[in-house]
Amino acid sequence: MSRESHADSYYAATAHPAPERPPLNTRKHADVCVIGAGFSGVATALSLTERGYRVIVLEAARVGWGASGRNGGQIVNGYSRDLDEVEKHYGENAARTLGAMAFEGSQIIRQRLADYAIDCDLHDGGVFAALNRKQLDGLKKRHADWQRHGHSELELLDSDTIRRHANTDLYVGGLLDKAGGHLHPLNLVLGEAAALEAQGGIIHEHSPVTHIESGKRPTVHTDDGAVQADYVVACGNAYLGNTVPSLRARTMPVSTQVVATAPLDQSTVDRLMPAGTCIEDCNYMLDYYRMSADHRLLFGGGTVYGGTTPANIEAKLRPHLARTFPELADVDFDYAWSGNFALTLTRIPDLGRIDEHIYFTHGYSGHGVTTSHLAGQLIAEAISGSPERFETFSALRNIPFPGGRSLRVPLTVLGSWYYQAREKLGL
Image 1: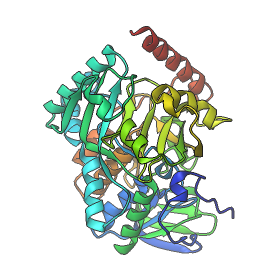
Image 2 (image 1 turned 180 degrees about the horizontal axis):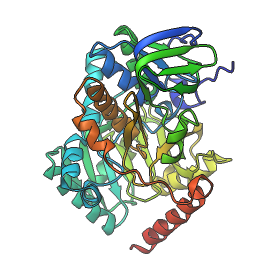
Image 3 (image 1 turned 30 degrees about the horizontal axis):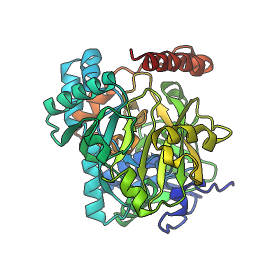
């Protein structure tokens, strides 16, 4: 059996020590079997063990091997679709319920850090940065919408005050979310996995699922073992593959790339990003970045539909970094890596049931750090007999990508070109 290691990333190089869990090699029984040991799977499993359930997690590679150990490490509240769009397409009740939950994922993360003493370099504060007046007007509207739903830890920034967060000529303003922030994502999921095991949960790594046998007590099969449980939760997200065939067409894998510079001196850090917050811009194909605990600039972007990795990640991202901070145009990169997230056509997370005993969650569309933790809480509530909040998400219609699997990538690329052209024209 192939035993894949974590991607060659800054996060893997600076991860806390973690045990390598043995593969599943026998038949076991549990209350719940969770497929995938990323944020979704571990968060769901931990929420369930906290409620007293016996949980087994099956992971094809290592804990945090996929997007959870490769992302930008930003705590971004809300969803990839603004709440006014949710209300427009799904109605006032859906917008009200999703709006009330929009910041809950970040609250769950902070509570877990406190409850289980997880060390993952948390720093508070995240900024949405506007490159033009239209984007700034959009942020003003988002600010008003979030306040309408009870979220008040927000501050609008003008072209001067945003320089406390990103000292660049690029932005005309922004929106500071004081409840946002950034952290070391791999150390977060490793810490949560350790907490899960301390609660009695079991994780089997190097145990790819081959198929699920449905029924009153579904059975999850691997090459060398099986888990029979009352409930199954599929949490593979962009890395689920064809494990659950009916889910494959509901999302599209999209790769995003990250580089980590060599460590910067303190004066450069203080000059470029004095507040220590993280940034994501408002472009359709956005850039995002932050300083690590050891003073590296972690800079991400370079979206590729279909989930392929560019031949040269550094060449793809360097012009974006240079545009943002010209003095770093020639900075050395110590790490460069790629990872996939799952995109839905609606940009709304896709939570639901395949049948009475099999749940799934995926499609966070770039907001996976926070929304995965919310999803885990909602699924645990549903399995525990309180499905109301989960059902708000599961009732939202998931629209398949046009053109099926063969055409969804080229058609989505055409759509992205359209929106990028509008941005360049200021429309």
